Length: 115
Image (tube, rainbow, N blue to C red; front, side, top):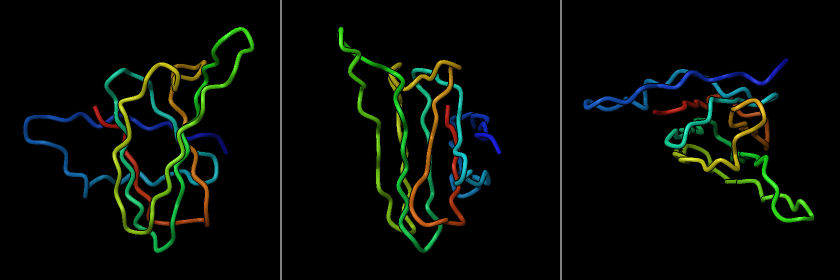
């Protein structure tokens, strides 16, 4: 399979019901969403096991092309987290931000890109 692209959920004055987010995370191949300077990424770990969310950077710095460290965040079971906004160092060559998941093979992990 391939990385699964997420369509951003638009926020409004009445807000976004995060309990209604129904896009399951693509645990095996990861997710992606189009990078914008204000976009955020929401994760609900609805599983009974911990999960690590990894967001790789595409940037390097200096003459030695040193890699900019990836973002990695552990999430215990039943927790929610909003990530971002993301700087341009997270924008991949195709214009998206990649999201990877590690840990046991969790179920019930819901995700959304938020505008």
